[in-house]
Image 1: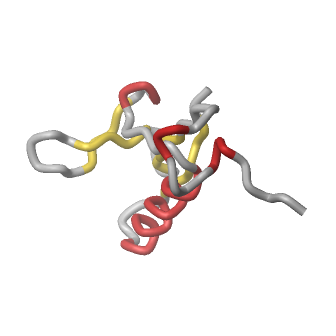
Image 2: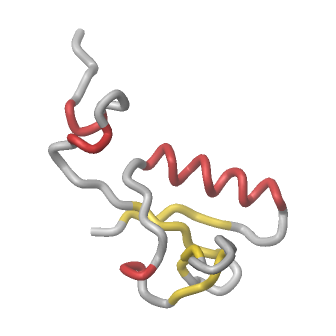
Amino acid sequence: MHFWAPEIDPAHPLECTQAERYVLKRLSNGAFVSIRPADQGLEDVSDPAAAYLFHTHEAALRAAGELNRLGSDGFDVVKVE
């Protein structure tokens, strides 16, 4: 059985045939998460288009899991259409 799909090929992530975009959302206030350019810290934004975009679901889950382990706030992954 063939399980490989070009849109999720980890060896060529920039050559995906279908763009996927995911953002992180804070559970406490519903804000989306962006990265401040000045100090690389997290900041809240109201528009998902202004949030930091992950191109794979796995990367977004990994980031949310790491932030959730830090315990300061809860984070969820949201797919951007």
